[in-house]
Image 1 (cartoon, rainbow, N blue to C red):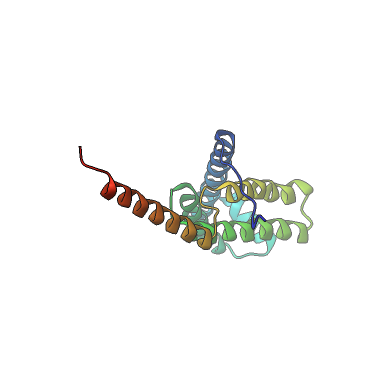
Image 2 (image 1 turned 90 degrees about the vertical axis):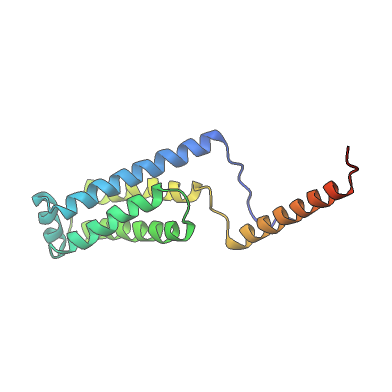
Length: 157
């Protein structure tokens, strides 16, 4: 009986992962930079949503760091936290636009980016749980020990 869903990694899935990851990373980097330099349109938008202008500096810093975190290889725990932060940021943005009565396009834009973020999250190569990683490590060690034992029993030529 299968205990989980196994997904084969194909070239197409890898391409989709990298496309969605790079798109989400670049989008967060661009918005983060715009928040940090306090582009007037962005600052005005924050005020319209009911947030203080300095919130853009805090948000921009986290957005830039998050864009780097999802693009660089490794660091699976940091990536999990980053994706969670992106989820909260984008759903919060959509709800803030809805609460202030903004047009549908302003509500749907963060949700469209959320689709890219969630695609990246779902397709990331290190999507296995720590228990699965431990089992893989134990299987690898067992295989290496078996290989060493074979080498010791083979006659030298």
